[in-house]
Picture 1 (cartoon, one colour):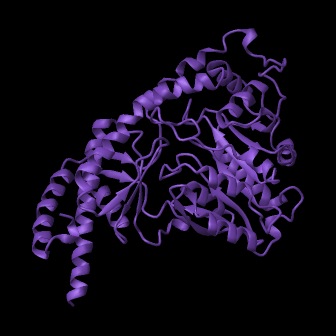
Picture 2 (cartoon, rainbow, N blue to C red; picture 1 turned 135 degrees about the vertical axis):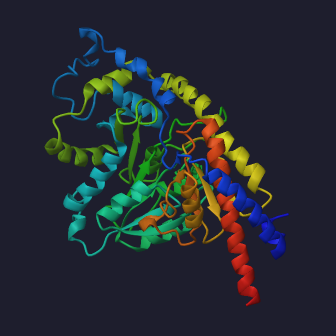
Picture 3 (cartoon, rainbow, N blue to C red; picture 1 turned 120 degrees about the vertical axis):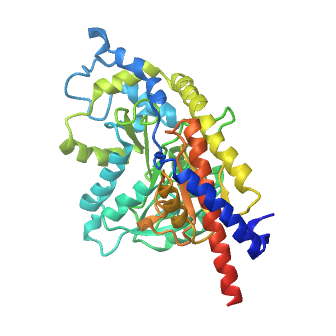
Amino acid sequence: MSYRDLSRKELLELKKQLEQEYQEAKSKGLTLDMSRGKPEGRQLDFAMPMLDVLNSESHVKSIDGTDCRNYGAMDGIIETKTLIASMVGASPKNVIVYGNSSLNIMYDSISRSVTHGVMGSTPWCKLDKVKFLCPVPGYDRHFAITEHFGVEMINIPMTTTGPDMDMVEHLVSSDPAIKGIWCVPKYSNPQGYTYSNETVKRLAALKPAASDFRIYWDNAYAVHHLYEEQDELLEILGECEKAGNPDLVYEFCSTSKVSFAGAGIAAMIASEANLVDVKKQLAFQTIGYDKLNQLRHALYFEDLGGIQVHMKKHAELIRPKFEAVLKVLNEELSWAKVGTWTEPKGGYFISFDALPGCASAIVEKCKEAGVVLTGAGATFPYGKDPEDSNIRLAPTCPTPEELEVATKIFVLSVKLVSIEAILDTCNEKTA
């Protein structure tokens, strides 16, 4: 029986039993972390041979003769542009290769817009108000960037096919203060959804009231599949060109969860006109990024096929972790009907929705028992989940054995907090 179908007496008896189990778990003094989407050490080990590919004078030059030890090639070497383009289905001519962090590129893109505008538009700092659309639940670091620059953020509900496009189209076309929308289009953070072809086409065909509106397309999980059956994502630059909006999108990606987290390569993919505008800033910002690291990646992976073979190793390692979490959730909570969760085919997260008003208490209860989760509300702008229900679970870093223990503590916390919420509701009805 679901918890809502139990009598008050049955709920109190169950709560007593669960509290005993929780105290036993708490007494073990565990320290388990499911808070961030970090690769574990064995994933990073897969890329260690990359460090040995630059071993002679012949391996320090790009195919066009650029000496990767020296200045030059500010926007990246051709081999790495080609590799990045293959990851997202774009053309190398639309790629700028930066340093190691796509988040840094996104920050720079917002900062540049604030101080210098977009392709000649009024700098945002001179406007009365700037707004961004934020599909929720979403990526907390996206929201932190726009909040840092004082941008007003508007929640857009996510569906299984992407953001609510009726709402997006209406707002973008009617309000010139809206300058962008954050998107994680493939295996979204945290739900693991992939935008449908229709959603991508509708985004590409937007008619913004603001000429400097851009789609911030964070394609972070382009090659991060868990199963042979993979989600497919329509390539957005081509769709924007077809729709007559070639400059509408800034796309971002990196190898932070492919090679080394903190020592990968990151890139922006955009129209040639957008890249001309971006390079004006780069001319002042850098003389060139780490081309040896770019060359190292290009030589090691060679092409998309090399990346795909490499990422199958990742999938074989982390798929059992996702399955361990989902197994416990399905066995322990599906019948209780006190939460719902996603079962993604790729990416780094599982999204859990508790009963309204319960997420903060669940996260705190887990913390007391030694399991650290992403803070409740983190997947919403300003850290405020209106329903206080969404919790992001990150299964990748702990071992499967640790995950089983951590998920059982999570389930205990969900059950206890949910019972308390149901009992409080019963008390209100009888008061």
